[in-house]
Length: 221
Figure 1 (cartoon, rainbow, N blue to C red):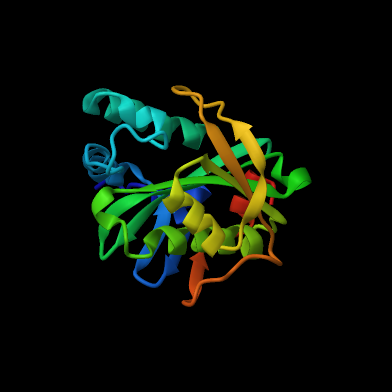
Figure 2 (cartoon, rainbow, N blue to C red):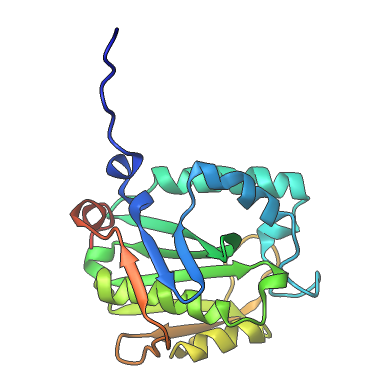
């Protein structure tokens, strides 16, 4: 009988896969390939009540099959692009074992700048439960308490009151305006900034697993 070697777990080969955040009903972790069929199904569901909203994401305006294909390519590309010079961790959001959205956290030259940016979305039927605020707070706990960030920045289209409300509930303050640089319609955006001192922490504890030296080295943390 041939003895086969014991291969290391994938989290040892790609440390972001070992990252898990838990806060209240929510679990946040990077999307693995096994999650992508559920992720693809989620991308076909509505995110905004008004399909013509200025806040509508440019990538969501594609036809569903194109949207899914592009999103899967995007997920694989993010994994290959992680380095201390720049990275994005796309965290899936699960509530009650069901994927309901995504919370991304990104940085450029994090070791020098100690600044993260973020973006997020929830499927429409998950709105109104406080998840948007809690998942942003969980991400900020990761950034400030475990990675050593000193600033977190965000932006949203003027008129996106739901996103504004989440930012302010987390302690962000207005930080000027800008014209969007993303594909699609050019809209005026409000910028926001939060620091560890102004951060409004969640009322529930946030548990963070998987932030070891291998992950820190990949991120420049």
